[in-house]
Amino acid sequence: MKKATLALAAVSMFGATVAHAADLVLGLAMAKTGPYVSLANTNEIAVDMAVEEINKAGGVNGKQIKVVKFDTGGDPKQATLAVRRFAEDDKALAIVGPFSSSEVKVSFPVGERLGIPQMAMSSSAPGLGKGFSFGFRNTTDEGRVVNEVLSSIKEKGLPHATGAIAYATDDTVSKSMGTAVFPKLFGEYKIPVKGEVDFQYKAFDLSPQVSRLVAIKPDVIGVGAPPEAAINLAKEMKRQGVQARLIGGTTIADPDLPQRMDGAGETMTIGTTFFKDYDDKAKKFSAEFSSRAKAAGLTRTVPNQMDAASYDIVYLYAEAMRNGKVGAAADKLADERKVIRDELVKLKDFPALEGGITFDADGDAVKPIYVLEVKKGEWTLLDRRVPKQ
Image (cartoon, rainbow, N blue to C red; front, side):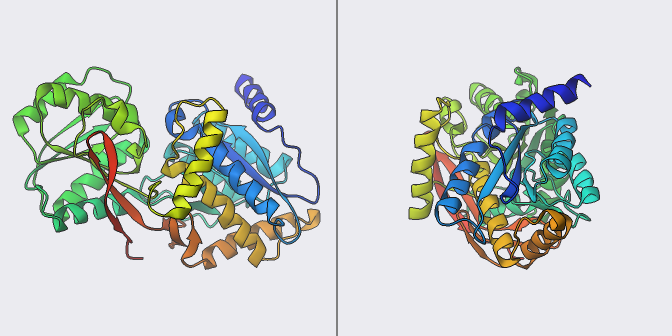
């Protein structure tokens, strides 16, 4: 009961916007607190930007979009409360979020029973959308992401003769990468795994794990970890003189990561679905985002891929509502939620901020992968690739 009370308080705190009967209501399940805060606390800015732009341009089908908000704190239990709140109390047409794979594992079944579309902005553990007709993820499966990273490394002739794996055991997507994604892909690219190390994602002292990596001397190390754990790993590797290239996916796609590593992590290579300097559209979005983040007093003012994904989710829903002629009729709520679901499936190569977006059979977005490499303490673009559908 106490947690439910806190959840409702979070809605009041972060969901000050009051929706009217004629509005097209979207719910935002955000993680402004909790373990993902460094990646997620700015997603709200991106959502608000998209809503303001769409409404300023006339809205959708002559109606305005309104957003009601709920801070899940990255907690799966709170994520299920958010779905019920949006579906039953707020009469939302669809939900932006939740953030993490842990939340998606429990919220997608709830949303399926209630018949309301959900679209996660970060969850990337393989297979979580399978079997859910109302569950979508505007993220790319980590298997696809890492595959493109390894393909780029191979094509550019970068050292990858031997490998190792390091991963956090207490985070759903990190563990999946360490136990499934990297072993499978290293095998496909004929990279022998010389050893693996694991740790708790909040662990500060990783010296024992890195000592094992010293003995292994791999060319590449597949990393499954949230940003803070990856930073600790990179710093300890530098201290112990490990020269291997760290390879990661979207779990460490933090714009500030190179600076936060304080000179460690040189040549770290990751796949992400957004690069702020790729084109004029990305640069314009990044400039406005940064202005708003600074005005809000936030520490990170550079948008990450989760921010871009959140922004695009609003536009994807808007396009689905536009194509399906959704009108927010109170007596047709269930039917219009189904229309949104069905129209999302029909979208092909939708021209989004991140690039062309299409959803696969499991409701996961297929979109460009930007392969980034750390050089002199900055992310630089190594490659841009479009996965096969």
